[in-house]
Structure formats: structure tokens, C-alpha cells
Picture (tube, rainbow, N blue to C red):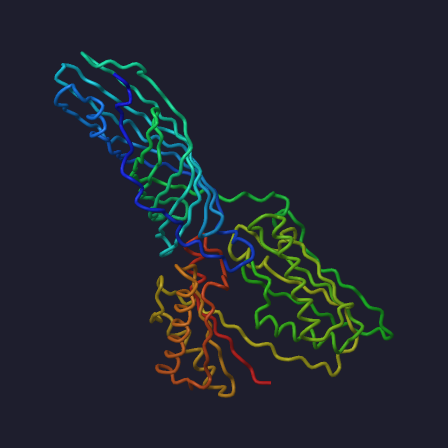
Length: 489
């Protein structure tokens, strides 16, 4: 009997599966803390649909046919991948869908048994949709190279001419799933996947696998030991001395401020520090300044060098365009992660290393120099519950001190800024941060008697991270309120 009596295709594909939530990142560079290597294992049940009608049609004339199907088995896969950013990853691995088969009995008498074993390799593009800080959904679409090994056996009046055909073929695969992260390193997945399969005798079909498994994120590349702060001697600023006609006591200006993570945009409180520098350089037109940009060690050395150069150039551009300092008096130099002033193993150290230094030539006469008073930034460590904006009672004393200051200085105003850690969407992050700022303003007005005319709000969502979101502590630091005290001129 011809051995085309096989398992046929499984149920038809119900529709094309797309990738979920591949939203574009705000930054022109991928965020370093969202990129990592990972690996894991899934195990579950594979299920195929065996075409009993076709098997029966191939045994025409043999009398009534009785068929027993074995259409499910244990399947598993080993996978590894690289998450490029919070919304996209590439993943590859090995899969084994198990073994499926049937036994057909005819009254001749005789039986025909058929089995197929399926295994192979795959490469998928994975789209990720964060829902909360620990829970996410994902979809996958990719290609797989599967090996199908068929085996057939007949008894009695049933004979088989080719008992062990096999075939290798490339087809598509698709799937959806959800993931819950127990920690920053370890998570659990639940998935449903569909594999398009060619058997060894010309049939095509689909095999579905439903599985659960574990995923482990590997640590980031450890930076070379040379740049570590502990191995470097204390940094001494180099002052460029401009010759002056009178030898008197010199006055020098050194600027030092920090940048947000992976950003080269100058924030408004830093612009006020630059206004002080601009006033000084306008007063002393022969002075020059070297603007030094620095970074922490998160990301590649090349990217950090570019980022630090961009930071220095941003400061120079602001001094030239905003404060009208001649460009010939300014030099921008990026040092990347090569000159840390603190330990990059801590969030506080990283924050100090994301900085600008301005080494300014000295002048001799400071008589009549007037500078604008820089505004005061109060970063209140107010903890918010995840996705919440309620002001907790334990912060009453901190807010009372702010209220007492504002009431004692009625000409002073304040801006309350709201911030968040990473959330499901940028729009939701902006909405929650604004709600937090508004709640603080309402608390100051309703409970502590501050005039509403002295207060305003600003929302920044997740755009100004104070710490990296790779730890729960870092995420908590990013859920914060800043209060900017605005002095009158």
C-alpha cells in the first residue's frame, strides 16, 4: 500500500499575527538600561490535528476502518536573545514539538501506523508592550527550520514501501504571550505559538504549542577597570591664566552641574547657572572657558564619548546663542567615561559623573560684578505608590517647611514638577506626573494656606530620569516631585 496515508495538515492558520507595541523611543539612542542579553527554557503541550478522513480514503476497499489518533505530546524549547530597547528584541533557539501519530485498523486484517517527530531552529522578531513595571505582553513573528522524521509500519495485508522518510524545510512561526518579572533578572513566561510544518510526504500543516517557562536576564558588560574612580588620582582642574596688567588677587569661576540620563538637553535651573557664567564672561571679555563634558559608564565607551561631546557642545551653543559670548572664547571637549569623580557602582556616583565642568580663565577685578541669583531646586524625596499620585502623610513636615518659606516670602513663586519611572505609555506617564504635581499644589493650598497664585505645575513624565530604571530603588527615585523656588529679580 502506498505510504501517502499520513497525518495531514493541522487546522488552517486563523490569521496573521502582528508584533505588539513597537513604539518608537523618544531618544535618538537606545536607552542603555533597556538593552540586555537573556536566555531561558519553556515546556508545555504540543497539539496537531490528524486528518482521519484522508487516511480512510487511502484504505478504500479494505472495509470499515478504525483509527486511533495520538495528536498531542510534550514540547519544549531553549531560547536566547537580545533586547534592543523596551519595545523590541531579537530571539533565536531550538524547539522540539514532540511526536504525533495514528493507528488505522482494517478488517483485512491488518493495521497501518504512522508517526512524525518534529524539531528545529528558529529566529524571531519580538515586539514587547510593557503594561506595568513587572507585567508585559509580547508578540512574535519569525522563521523556523524544522526537521520532520516520519515512520510507517504495516501489519497483515497492509504493506509500506518507504517506512522512514524525512524532510527539512523552512517555514514561518508566530505567537503571543505574557511575562511577569519576579526580579530585575528573573521572570516567567506563558506562550501560545504556531509552527508551520512540512512532513516528509508532501503535506503541510500547523502544530500549536502552549508552554510556560523561565527567562533570565544577564548582567551588562563590565567596564574595563582602568576608568574606575578608585584607580585614578584625584582630579585637579587646570586653570588657564590670562595675563593681566595689575597683579592683584585673582577671581576664578568653575561651573559644575549634572545632566539627566542619556540626555544632552540643558534644564532650566542649569541655564540659570550658565547665566551667572555668562555675566562673568561679559564683564571680563578677555577670559576664555573650556567646557568639559563627562558621562557615567552605562553603555559603550564610544556612545558615552559622543554623548559627553554633545553635552559640552550644547553648553557652548547656549552660551553663544543665548548669552552672546563669542564662540572664539569657548572650547567644547568630551571625555566620556574616562574621568569619573565618583564610583560608578552606585546610582549617586553615576549621577555625579553625568556632569559638565567649565574651567574659566581668571580675572583680577571683580568690583561692580553683578550676577543673577540662581533659583533654588528642592528635590523632595516623596515616595509615590506605583501608578498613584496620592500625597502620603509622612511628607507633611517637608511640605510644611516649604509652605512656611513661601508664606514668609509672598513675592517668591514656586513651580512643582512631577516625574515618573517607566510606565505603559508616555501619555500615561505624563498624566500621572501632572496629577502628582497638582496634588502637591492642592495640599499646599488647602492644608497649609499657601496662596495658589504663588504656585504652578509642570509635568515631565518619564523624560527626566534621576536614576536608571534597572532596579526597584532607581524606579522609586524617578517617582519624585521637584519644587523650584523662583526668586524675583
